[in-house]
Image 1 (cartoon, rainbow, N blue to C red):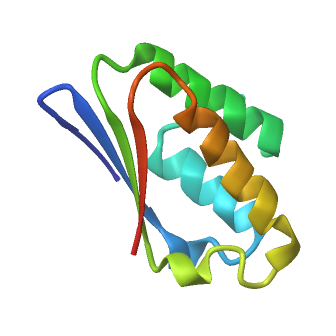
Image 2: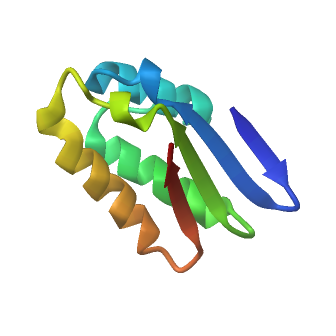
Image 3: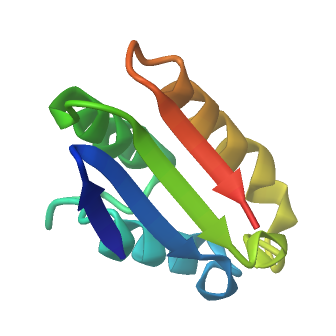
Length: 100
């Protein structure tokens, strides 16, 4: 789900739909409106996050509900997930991730 409130982009991710890497990629792609050519890999996630940041006028906020479920079936991928979002946070604009 995506909200554009006063040029602030808010994306809501349902962590209960992200129990595996494939399901996480599908949920990110759907909720954050990644392009159809999204490559379903971590480099492509970073590229899409960068594109979102470049296009944003103001803050980008990602809310991850049920965050305890994210990659619960493939915990070995948690670090690369965190690194991908950390990379986006280094952008010149504000990128905020909220875990619930």
